[in-house]
Image 1 (tube, rainbow over the protein chains, first blue to last red):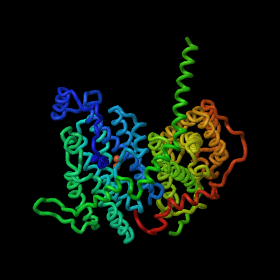
Image 2 (cartoon, rainbow over the protein chains, first blue to last red; image 1 turned 90 degrees about the vertical axis):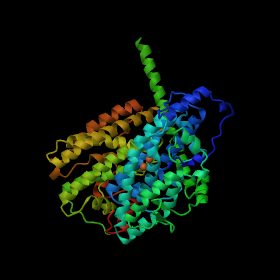
Image 3 (tube, each protein chain N blue to C red; image 1 turned 90 degrees about the horizontal axis):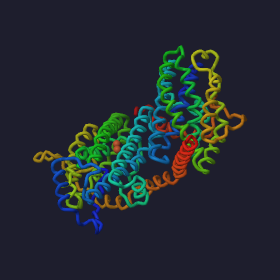
Image 4 (cartoon, chains in turn cyan, red; image 1 turned 60 degrees about the vertical axis):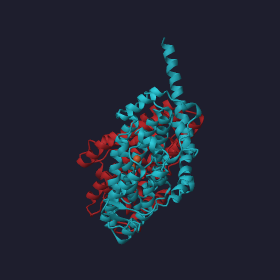
Length: 335
Length: 252
Ligand SMILES: [Fe+2]
Ligand SMILES: [Fe+2]
């Protein structure tokens, strides 16, 4: 999911340790009763911090996620595909916008959150640090990456924080459209020329493992799972969601007549699940630590856009201030 | 893959000119996606690019039908080389900074809004139908670009200087937008020269509020409508057409 980096320890400021036990009990009872928590409701500081981190990481992932797919907009191979890709990347930007707005309801401004991304302090999904090398990568991303995002985000539609849950309802509708569109690109390639089929297989070979890593570290290593589950910020564990994704996706890949890059992949009759081989968690850690193939390019692209746009944002603010001043002067003159 | 030869009648040429304008402009706008000065502009410029891409597709489809040679929209977009493109030069210039992008969108929308409004009453029902949709879209584009012309012209010293430079750079490319249509199809399409007063009025209104000066009449660049382009179009098409050219006959 886009919020996989939850294995960071929640470091509580010393002053926030003592929550009023009565309020805390009332809060936990409301969460247990599936009541939605709204921005003006009392909430424990750790809940606010965890959610701010999770929602902003999700927002950053949507924004950084525009880059690998944006890489193919000018090269899309037909006008229909170009329009669909441009609309998809635009949707991801829209997801970022609603998510920043949801995070802002917890009391941190979008400017502050963006600053955390640009300074490298905030995380975003590891998946967007991989390169898009051929057109088939656009199909593979829609099928696998949007597919994995849906697995994570559908339960988030029922998450305990109201603004996040509502943002997710809207986002999920669009993600499932992206997933179908990506699969349709894969299907077209898989049924196309030998070169196109090879392109599709190569994309699956490169994206499969990173897609499985999107669900985050295995349950034993995920520092936040317990409390996040109790507060209904999270509803399924990383491993449970990963398994659900594998079970849904493997038959789709077989329908494409493509081969998964996992010699240990097999259907286990007893459990009814597809069993997969060992995930290279060292690669995952390295990508999160900044050593993925495109970490540097992705952050540089965001920083460049931000820096080159500074004069535009300043001009918009200056114009708005001048306009207010002119209106005030006009009102005064009229009195 | 080899280029196609288009059996160009005056109507096909005229439709291709507007379709190429829209496609080439959409391409330049789409280069901002993920790189705009603020997230709201990533979305807004992508929206405008999508509208223009939609207009290009409708126009290519109709041009292909009129041509009657069995070509489709993708043949026209991906299998003509630069000298066969008929877009006005202004659209192929590199995206430049945000001021250039906005000035280009403003000038082109200020011409195309009255153009599509006039096209809505074309005796050609297909053109009238495309115009009815395009007119609504361009109304929004003109409002969006006009608001930014004012913000940037009025905002800070830097934004004013950048916008003034963008206007000075692009103004000589606006003349080509008023080129007359071939006489045999004059009844089907708006008379571009007659749109000048509407364009000038929009420029005067927005420039006054933006504190910008309209450049003096001077030399106008042209050539795109006869296929004589700047050096930039070839590079754009090399990128845009890469897959169609590299994998002949593949379906995507
Ligand atoms: Fe998204
Ligand atoms: Fe998506």
